[in-house]
Amino acid sequence: MDPNFISFGITCYLVFVVSTTLHEAAHAYAAMKLGDLTAYYGGQVSLNPMPHIEREPIGMIAVPVVSYLWGGALFGWASAPYSVDWANRYPKRAALMALAGPVANLFLAFISYLIIMCGLKLGWFTNPQSVSGGLIGMTQFTVPIIEDDAVMLGIATTLSTFLYLNVFLFLFNLLPVSPLDGSAIIKVFMSDDVARRYQKVMSDPMNSLIGIVVAFMVFRTYIAPHLSWLVLKILYPDIGYS
Image (cartoon, rainbow, N blue to C red; front, top):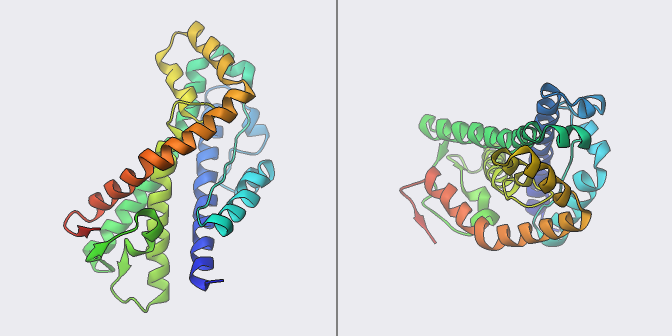
């Protein structure tokens, strides 16, 4: 197996674990502040990935590893527990709790972007002359000036992965279908009574299964390709694209 494929997979997995841990910790922290201590007692108000991995070992370990080795695209999930009774009593608070996860991913993407921009300004990185391949070629997106420097190449690859993965996680989770965060966030715009009825419908396991399949297909087909190029143009507005 190609060593570059393995090393890039390890980078992607570590970025996934950090990003997912922050996402779920943000959910848990927001819930705690808004009156639900379920995740706090479960240990999820933590940046230590172990409580999150122990809660979802299949979504945090098995599926990401298998999906990358099988298809070259890492996929996985995690979750933070919450009280359904609390969410039904306070649907607006539950919506704010749901929003905290995507906001955490947006924060990580913004920090990655700032570091990349600083690296370009300080001469640590140089703009690529051209790019192609979208997310698959993300290792090209921030190329160190000294291309033989393994450390700088690793930093560039990691920053690019942090930026792209967290932009994708931010927008994917905002899709308004169960079980994604967007299905809870839109309750902010509903009356409490409508939000409770909506919550009951969205909590049906079959609706969640259908929702995640539809969301993944729509995002992968119609959103992800355009999003890749949008981030590229923001990073490197003066280079050519193919």
